[in-house]
Length: 233
Ligand SMILES: Nc1ncnc2c1ncn2[C@@H]1O[C@H](COP(=O)(O)OP(=O)(O)OP(=O)(O)O)[C@@H](O)[C@H]1O
Image (cartoon, rainbow, N blue to C red):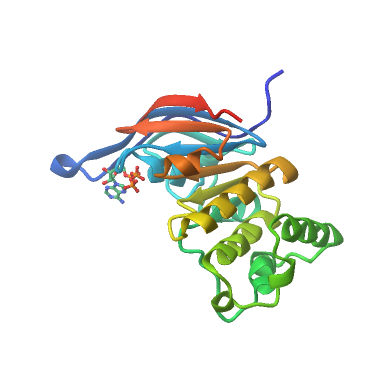
């Protein structure tokens, strides 16, 4: 039985510039990301990690090849449809938390729901409760970002990314701004969201220690996948 795929790429290429400044950031990437798995993307600086993530997330258009997320081929979507698709099916966690300073943790977590004009359905509220508990944020919901540690702020950002029940969450160097204790905590919680909530997470990271929290590491070099390896439990 083949497992369900959260996302896949076939023959993915991406070039920037032209003539003397032409850069081949991706040179033909084939990748299947099974649902319910935590995948780390590693590789040297300039190897194409961010470009791959942006193409998989529908934030950037590939030069060639195809990307399918949650069964939907992205190349068939126009700009507006792609924006809606990302909003409904893709979650993002960035290095720089990106929380709104005047809103409480709880308001930040609900903001994308509000912006999408969706109701706080009883299902959404149950999911909110489960996520807040998994991420150990119950005591912090009334705090503003400035009243939270970096690790707590990133946990709020993760809760925000998880709330809509996205098919896939992309985390771009999520521990880049954190000390080692907070990093370990955030990575454990990302792992827990995969185990307990069945979330699919793809994380770009430079740090081999961070990649150890994943189920699998995909290594890029010069725009190609050079290695895929399972992480020992
Ligand atoms: N918008 C752009 N315009 C021109 N070149 C770009 C652009 N974005 C990326 N590149 C080039 O594409 C290549 C891959 O870049 P990318 O940012 O994907 O690498 P990365 O592995 O994420 O690097 P880092 O670890 O330093 O973030 C690099 O040579 C980079 O300079």
